[in-house]
View 1 (cartoon, rainbow, N blue to C red):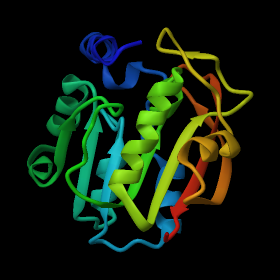
View 2 (cartoon, rainbow, N blue to C red; view 1 turned 135 degrees about the horizontal axis):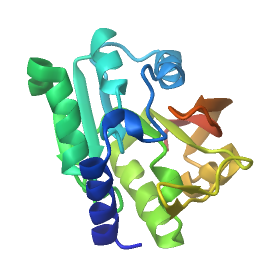
View 3 (cartoon, one colour; view 1 turned 90 degrees about the vertical axis):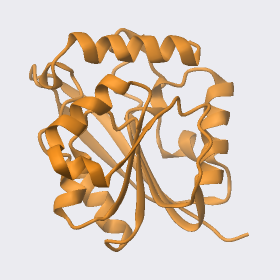
Length: 208
């Protein structure tokens, strides 16, 4: 799938479905929040949520006192949903409409978070582009949290194929400069009541 096709697909999803009508909806992104806390970053840390779309992680991070937040998504409609929900608070967030495989970060981030974007990159070239983007965006000492469907999780989502991962396969894509700190299993309960098996891996970029 090309970047243009990805954008058209996700724009259509968010134009035709409500926030609570998608399988990945979470009222409270507890595991992501726990992993962010586990990094020990402070309220001034620069955090980017990749594929954040209409996710409520940004709401939770604001409530935790974080002040330098960015949300990236390929769908303008998804970001508009979050901006509308946040109201005046949205003005303090950097909203980025971009495909992650072609994004050129303009600054360094202390923490990169991605829940369920990476597993849609089924082409090796797209995964390589993703890793190259992380190496630009996250400097030594920075943190990377990536959540994907686990090896025993779903094989498709939103009508698209995915690649299921564990911490080892993600680490291979990121490269040796990213050290695995922890990995957690997580069963996400969809709004329809189905359990989806996820894994979340937390890495830290090493010096050198």
